[in-house]
Image (cartoon, rainbow, N blue to C red; front, side, top):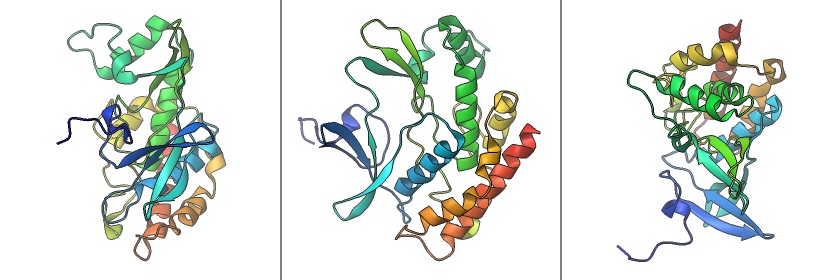
Length: 251
């Protein structure tokens, strides 16, 4: 192992197992992330997620596709700067001591109340509801958070949604994709269904804007070169099913 850090890769300071690279384009720092497994699906998942957040009007980091070194990667611009820092939920929850027997959900909300970040609970619940649609299995406490002024330490609000690639059954064989199958969840429950029950009373999303969204999903995935026949349609149908499940749970 080299004693020198790899300054081309953000793995010195960011979590995750996917191959990553920083590039500078037009003076902006751009993060590139590769796919994994037999389908190399994660970059395309970010495009689907971007389309979903656009449709629902949710603040998010937009992603696009680039080809780098013979492989398709997702790209996004850095959303922090010299004056704005990201405080992950894991870091944020250390603001107060967590009493024994208090769940992460209860403690998270107590921390939000303590610093009076407006609409934090609503924003997080809406994000987790979108994660339900995407069958996102990796929205851990380091994968969302808040923005803070790095000089005054004044809270600016919730961070835009980012890093939604570990979703949409990216490691599941095509024949096994099913909207109703149990999907693991983070950070407040262990399954998507149980987490949805926890957040459903606080979700406020214009789901009517998602009529026909599965067509957009299939259109995006039809460009995925590693997909087998029928995978794009199978994922699109599962997304449609999960949108209907979310509507039912909110009714």
